[in-house]
Amino acid sequence: MSNLFPEPTTPFTRPLADLEPRVVWLQPSTEPEAVTARRHVNAWYGEFPDPAGRLAAKLTSANDGNHYSALDELYIHHALRQVERDVRYEEGGRGPDFRVYRDGRQVLAVEVLSLFMREEWTREARRHHELTDRLNKTLRPQGYFLHVEVLVQPQGSSLPLKDLTEFAEAFLKVLPDPQVAAVAYEAGRGLPWRDFDRKGIHVRFEALPMRPNAASLTDPDARIVGHGPVIGGLVDSQQWLKNRLLYGVSPIPRPKKPRNFSSFCHSGGRRPTRASQSRPYRASRSWRSPQKESRLPTTRTKGMAGSST
Image (cartoon, rainbow, N blue to C red):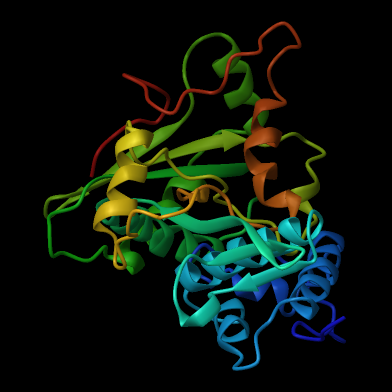
């Protein structure tokens, strides 16, 4: 077994910030899921033919695209070796990624495709992450979580993070008791919300009441902003895959022999982090009666404390 990701000696259990490189989770985290992931990745890398260390550099890269692509290739190599032990990577210095041999005869060729979110959606996600990281670093959940959505941001402009943080802090200070807000929501009045609207930038803050005994009240690593808004749109997966095959950075030529394509989609969903990162949304929903199973609204036409400034 390799030691590409050594076991950390200092406890590290906090969730990752949205803009932190995903490789951080495999490096210092001491969460049980991270310990298990490191064990698997180290074992799989120990079987991988990487004399020049190119895959190791990608696996430990702070660039999420490189990191995830390397994990995809590492997993496919491991899976192929469960079928045949003779699996060769980029044989002869060219594609496909893997060739599988049985009794010295090639029986399979595999190209690994890692698909990522569209660039414009990635930029949109990043502007939300900049704000949520600032809010989570500055504010603690004390009775409420926040759902934050950047509705309008002029192209080329930056979010006024300091002003937005102060706006959110002021909003939280004037909220009613969380149980009052929860009862009002059950009665159909909507959740407390307020809009920041200055110089063409429009950001909506929505307050989600916590349970009286929510673990986040005593968790020093709890985040006041959990999951952000849904970002993206409809995707024609067939066309997406076709474009990647024909017009990617390295278009893949038509193979002379049958070839298998293994694709992995990294479309901006939540990366490996501790399970409590999604706790805010679950905790806020716990105010609902058992008979009401619908999700809390993420859009609304009116609600408590809804005003613009």
